[in-house]
Structure formats: C-alpha cells, structure tokens
Length: 545
Image 1 (spheres, rainbow, N blue to C red):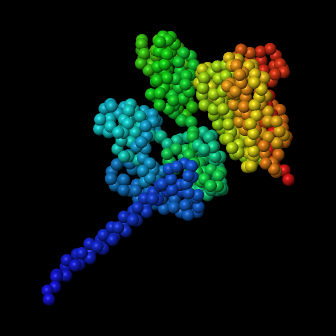
Image 2: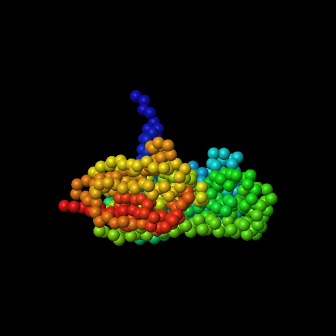
Image 3: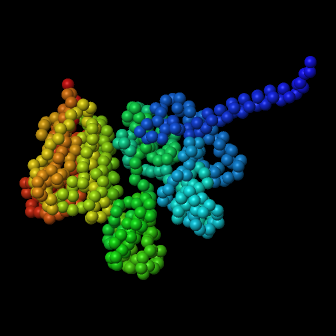
C-alpha cells in the first residue's frame, strides 16, 4: 500500500485553521465596528427619526465605554498612517465614520472651517495648490468655496485662504447650536439633559461640559448629523430637531430685507436679481453668523460696480451700504426679541404649577409666509394645533419686508379624550376690506368646558364679498374642567385703512399654563378713532374629582 506524504496534509489542516481564525477575526472586527458609533441614543441602522432609536439602559452606558476603547484604537491607527489632519479628528467624528455618516452627500453652503478660516475656492490653486477639482471629482459638488468631502474623509472640509493653514474641517452638523428650541421635528417636548427619566442616557452636562446641555434645549453633543434631544415620550427615546441656521444670508434691496433667510447663497443671489430694471438703491447680500451681520457683504454683479472700503456696491455710495447693513441689524434685533419672549414664556411655564396645563407640553407652529393685502389674504393661513392640543397664543410676524407675513402660534397639550366640534362666525364684508372689518367677528368657543383648537379666515364660504372665520373647539373629557377664565388685551394701535401686516403690532399670548378660549378685535371704540385692540380670554384646565 502506498501512503501519501504527511506534509501536505499538515499544510491543509494549517490552512483550514488559519481560515477559521480569519473568519473569527472578521466577525470580531464587525462586532467592534458596530460599537464605534458609541451612541446609545439609537441603533446605527436607525435612520428614520420617528423611530426613536433604542431606549437607553445601563447596558448602553457600558456600550459607550467599549466604543471609546475602539475609537482610541482607530485613532492610533490613523496616527501611524501619518495623516495629521485625520489624527486630530474627535471621537464623535470617529463614530460618524463608523456609521458611514461622513458628510459626503453634503451640498450646503457653509464656507468656513471650525476655526473660522474662509475656504479657498475649489477651482483655484492659490494660496494652496491641490488636485481636488470638479474635473477630478465630478460627483462631489465642488462648487465655489463650499465645504465638501470629495475623498471619503471623516467629514466636510476645505482648503483655507490662509497661506499658513492648508485645510480644516467644517461644522455642518449643528454642534455649535446654542439656541432655545426645545421640541423635536415632530413637535415632541424634549427631556432635560440633567434628568434620567423617562430615558436613561450618558449625555449629561458633566460629561459634555462644552456642548451647552442646558435645560431641555436641542443640542448635538456627540457629533451627530444635526441637533437632537431625548424626548418626554416614553415610546420614543430621541428625535432630531429643526433649528434655525447659525450662518445664513439676508437680501437687502430698496431699503428693506427681502425674502427672509437663505442658507444657500445661490438662492439669495436669485432673490437679489429680481426687479433689476429698477436702477436705484443699493442691493446687498449680507452674511449673518451667530446672530451678527458680518462687516463685508456679498454682492451680485451689476452695472457701475466698484469697490469702496471693502464693500461691493451698486449705483450708490458707501453711506447707502452702511444704511443697508443697519436695516439687516434691525431685522436681527426684532428676531432676537421674539426669541427672548419665547424663552421667557417657557421658563415661566416651568415655574408655574397651579393647573393641569402647567405641566403640559407646549409647541410652536407656523402658518408659513404669504402675501400681504386686504382681509381675504388671511385665508391662506390656517392655525391648527391638531389632535390633543389647544391654542395658547398667536402673533402675526413679517417675513423680512412689508410684502409677506406669517402667523406664529403656540399650542399646549390637552387631556386625552377631548371631542372637537366646528363653528363659524356670521358672514360679513371681507374681500378687499382692511383690518378694521375684523371687529365684526368673535371667535368664541360657546360651551363652558371648551378651549380653542383651530381657526381659519374663510373668504369662499360666504356669498359676494362676504367672509367668516371657521374655528374648532375641544371639549374636555370627564374629570377635567375649564375654569379661572380671565380677559386680556393687546393694547391700542392703528387699524383704519391698514392692510393685514399691521396686525403684527398685536400679540395674543395667554399666561403660562393657560389656554385660549376666545378672541376678537374690540368693536367698542374704546381706543378712539382709527385705532383698536384685540381682546382675548384665557383659562386654566384643572383636574376635578
């Protein structure tokens, strides 16, 4: 009998053993990569915001610690590879790398690095020569000097205009947001960062001291793709928030701000180009960062264009440009005052505990911008708090100029089980009529145990030039009662012959914890000729035996 040599058999066995080891190692690496995110407020696969991610447990905190170890190993590997830019990446960005959230799809218009350096245009080779051009990377959106990630880096970046600094990462994820938005995109109230109920979590002010984790304001402490918060909904651990941009553009033309905020410079230029036949007045695009107008505005090409003291101007002199910048600054002051009022309202509610409403969640809503005009133009704005909410305040706000407006309104949660019915005011003259004709309508929930949930000015439900207001009232369930109702007013102001935009001088706001039950423009003539005020009623919702 002939025997085969023993060595090949040993070689085969060794190869099989090696394959098994490689397979085990691969599995371990895969398991490790799932921890690189280290983010216990969701699974790496959760992309739908409403899904809420995983409810955090003490096991999730242990997972965070494992993730930190994995991130340190990845950091060491990068340093060995000798890339000084990659080696300075934060652990939060490492987590984004592990979850493939590297900003490669970002197509926004941020054009400064995290350190405040201006970005060099991608189609320029000065002050830094490079090979990241639109021709070499046609799918990467290398437009103007906007931050991008053409090479699979850990986040959007750019070359800088500083000869001493080659390139830097950009903040496009809202990690610097320090505003007071405290509700998610779906209107759910945020959980305070300093408490562990209803959701346990590791993102507290002590562990993230530089992340601004105040109260229950939306933040991005872990380098996620945008500001978020844990929610007060037991079924949904967390959601992203919609927050105002920290950097945007205002279009100032013909003495006023036009069109609101633009995060895309291209859209701002398109707005500026409208009505170019009017050859008078200065036109500017000013940039705003963190609530401050920058000193050097952007402009669009036009006739007789010259440079003067760093300002690019069109038709007029430097004084005109200064005046335009002042207009933008006044616009920001008005906006800041409104935000301060909203913050004070929330803080007041936190201190109030006299009624069921004091502990109820509160959310802000917006009717969207539309054209100014006579009363019939109000039919484009429907104020609807939706199921299980009732109205707490409303206020008309200009959309940057005298041509458009929107209505901001606040809604407070009501007890489950409320029933809703619809009412209408009587038809009155409305089309092509000015705001003084509003005093013919009284939006009042007729029953004692009702609060206002929705109202909508309607110009097509009545014959001829008639109009009315359709509104809905929520009747509270057994065990809950509307009481302690009080009347308030907005103060007198001009109304005679005025368009809708003049209603911005009246702000109907119920005190903390209360609900609106009724409102009307005062028909009594108390304010004198050509003037009036709004009267409105606000009530508590209390628990009864």
